[in-house]
Amino acid sequence: FYMAPYMMGSTNNASAAVAYGLTNDCDFNLTQQAFRSARNTDYSLGDTVKFYKSGSGDERRYLSPNRREKVCRQFNSSIACSYIRSYRENGQHPNIDVLNEVTPMVEPRPEAVMHLRLGDVARFGDCWVHPCRKGGRLYQFTKDDYDTVRDELKNLTTTITIVANPGHKAGDVARQYSANYLENVMGYLRSLGVCPEYRGIRNADDDFAFAASAKVFVRGGGGYSKFMAELVRKRGGKVLTPNLRFN
Image (cartoon, rainbow, N blue to C red; front, side, top):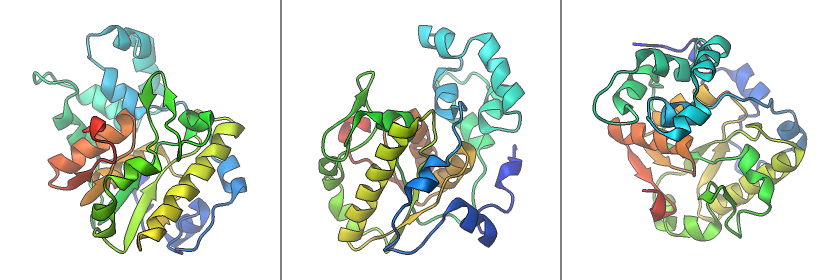
């Protein structure tokens, strides 16, 4: 079983919480400065899992042999690299069993987690009101989408932890829209009587392992969030999908 070293001591460390901006203050407002400082990264766990051994043109485009080697050369201790090294055929693609094996379980398990896809896909404007698409795909849910699970969100818990990284392949415009979108979601949750706790800016594997360990998970758009949801279900948790087209 693969245990990623980046997980050790990060979840409950008070100094790390300050550094990352973690907050459980329900009236907390984000700072644009914090979002501008988010490190841009080309690491893409979702694409690696989605395209590796897919046998499609997308695999050749996104995961050529040189790029597969680059994943493990640049991110040697990552979940993506471990997935590649541990991959085995089981008649299904992707192999969720392997992904489950190489993704650490965070204990104690988080009660409720919401993932928001921020970063590059947020550059199209106010996606909270109007659907924004990238390549024809919907990555950020609107208020109307969240209204479809409004009652379930209200009945979940008094607190929900949000995982979201504005620095994923993002420029200044996308970071600005990312901050606006996150603030809209947090305000929406407060209006339901739920306290949103933004986990702060962390690396993709740390967020993935945390979210995939949730007892209840509210998924976002994109493959990264889809695989979080699949692991939550596999581990006996519950998944809420704001837009039924993503089930």
